[in-house]
Image (cartoon, rainbow, N blue to C red; front, side, top):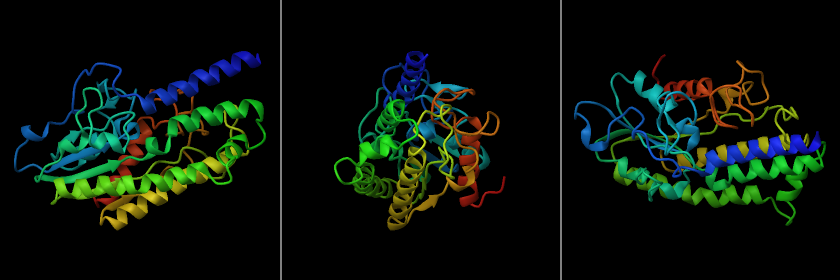
Length: 300
């Protein structure tokens, strides 16, 4: 029984990591997520460009319109664009993207910054999770819990050198976010730039739900705090760059991967709804869209 459970958890963690780190293994079915490339728009339409990773692209949420990037036409950029009265969406978000993919191609997806132009009027950016190492964190923490399910083995692992490696990774990602935002402003000088934070993945209470989410009991609060630290860094970098920050954590509290199907907006490592492991489902994408629209003062 224990061997079987370990195998299942290992496969689930690997699946989550695959989505977080992939992006070039599957040929593209379509490009743009239902939008149009920069050269195909009409001058009178608002030009909205969505940049980001898999939390933006919406892996496995129907309908997938770009298999290379695991991009759904029901992700939050698509939902936001639909509310912006005919905005022309260019969605170049891609599963597995890091800040590096802003400047370099990812499979069939061109460098994401190439979608920007002087006529771009709105940019949303959700990036940084893969720079910190979301996929490897999931693998490490799920694996560590097998040997110490009631302790905090993941926190001990990442602090074994005397300092918190995940805190250091977040700090190291901050200048990368600065570089991306600087490039966005240069390429799209007239655009409103919106930095989108990450939703609540784990219970805000810090109380876990093992074995449904296979982290050790004592690591839930640590991982919660790590995500909050990442979001706080993104908020600070947005403010420094005169961009708008959208908090998607607060409105998704109580809908994390430990809650029941139908209530949760983030799927656990074994999803019950069409979504990638440890990623927003369709309801989660709707919630992030609502947060963005509220920050843009667009009433639903």
